[in-house]
Image (cartoon, rainbow, N blue to C red; front, side):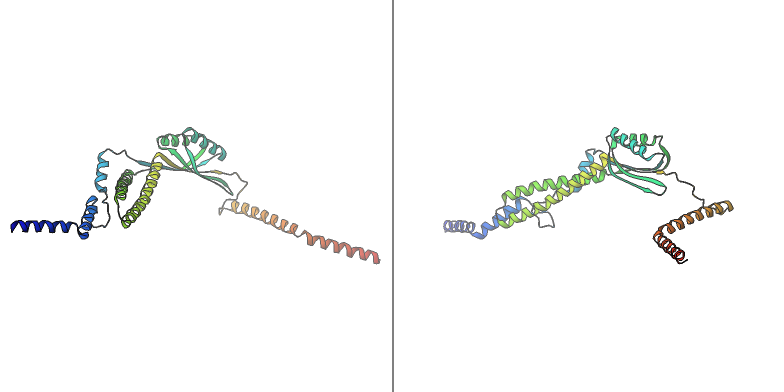
Length: 282
């Protein structure tokens, strides 16, 4: 009887293994065991710990990343010469003009420039620029430095982690068997690719800021004009200002009268005609 009981138990075990429910359960367990989901999330791939990765990158003696910039404002004797000198220094130090704006006012010429200078030549460029004999007066000189090493580490770490996660998703896509799994993994890959591109753009921007320093220059040239009365309460100043204003007023009235020349022409024609008629009547 014991033999018959053992044989019956074995047959029941094989029958259970051949059932569809048991096969489905086994496949689900295999899929879930291949890549464990992250805690508290329904995703298929668990990302690496970003905090742990940051610690590892700090311990690897990450090079310090500094963004340096300068802001200068000064008066020059000759605007064109000043711009020529700046272009010569740009060519010498392999710099470039990012933005340039020129405009004029009644008594001065102005130029605003935004330059990009290789970080290694930043100090030399500033020193040579301010040595120029064409500079009449330096009004402002601000130089700043900003440490972005932490931002660099953060972006590089996140980028590395997302790329590693992308590789695992791609491996999982090759093993996916159902349409729903394929669609789910492809959607995650698409979103992850967008995040990777965003992080790469951010890293490129930071690298550019570190490698090339920004120099903002505001220069102006005072234009020599004629006599301009001083705004003073002294008798002589008030007298000169009154004479100046009176002369300007006479000039304005004169040109206003000249502007009415058609009326004067009609008046002269009528006067001449009236005089001619009187002479004829006599």
